[in-house]
Length: 85
Image (tube, rainbow, N blue to C red):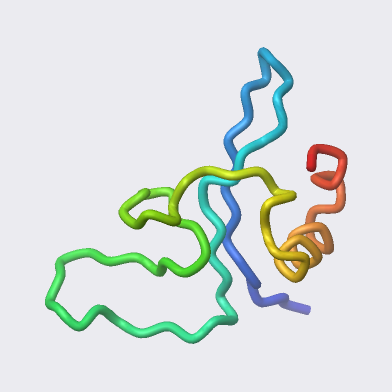
């Protein structure tokens, strides 16, 4: 059985200080998307949080700062992350 990928998640963690991980990229693949209106050589899907940091909302944040729905989605796939929230 093949499972479709629900989202893309990238974390940044300082293992030396054991600080909680910061989410630097969270892209949900179930949200409506559209291609850019202007012609571009490269573009990427950006909806919740993008690691490129091109938008004001693209600042690293803790898992507990996401909506309850997004937290449920993430922890359902990666339950061990709840220990770091």
